[in-house]
Length: 409
Image (cartoon, helix red, strand yellow):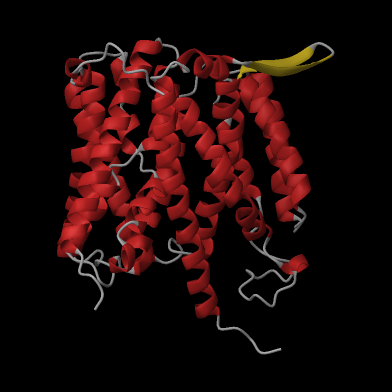
């Protein structure tokens, strides 16, 4: 059988990835709009009943009972974070983050895109300790939404722009994971952490012994999730740890790179990543968006949008993201640390920075972590800021790139 060019295969995989992410972003937009419509309709009470619907189980003296919204945020989003961890590991070992030249610009831009929004949020809210729990809300980028906006621009978008945007978002997710682990952990249960550590140790042992079957990792990951849930650390971090433990290498101890590779030799990480993508893109994230984006607007006014928390988020995402990303990119290019990707210039970089202001999924997730204990009013205020900022960033970014990117001849 004739061998297949690895470069051609990589190109096909990238096209498939971007098609999936772009379509997922469009679905997210539709579901977020639906949530807003339902939350502000006569179906509002039904919507709230769905969010608070008790779901759980009890076995002997042990049980779990949570509202449907919390199951989505704690359990289903752990699968989302599992997928994020798989993507980060693959990119770090064999993708855009595996070489210094490819890694430098997106890593620096992602850091700038986290620091600048946080500083703007601090500038507005530094006098309020409770409000300052939300400093990380405007630091995240929603890759599905952003690539969905790029998809609306058609073939005028250079591949280098899609690669840069997706890689910035991957690094952005990694920073968000670290922020969640460090700053949004509550009282700890040492016993549950010990059990979680034992499960992680077993996964690490499986990895070191070259076990490539997926089910032992996923079974242990489910147990680790349960222990982490009970430990005081946010349960979604169990998904991150499980994803990092899944081996990227196949039975031949090399990363699978040919479509000729049999199913048994395919990289476990890539196989799981491929299997999870549609479930996360078309079920988990839309469910998360539907349960978290439904903000009742009755009684809200312009003054509510200009309150410190939503204003800090709005400024952080709409201004902080492009300022941090573009300023970092310009400095990096000026001093020779990195170069713009092929087909991109300052105007294109500015457009990327604008689109990175679409926070949505991760911003809403951090909102719940930051203000879940402070009361619904701060959650509503933060959700208002995230939604307004994401809409503004999406519209401004689309218009700017539509004006500045040249259509193919």
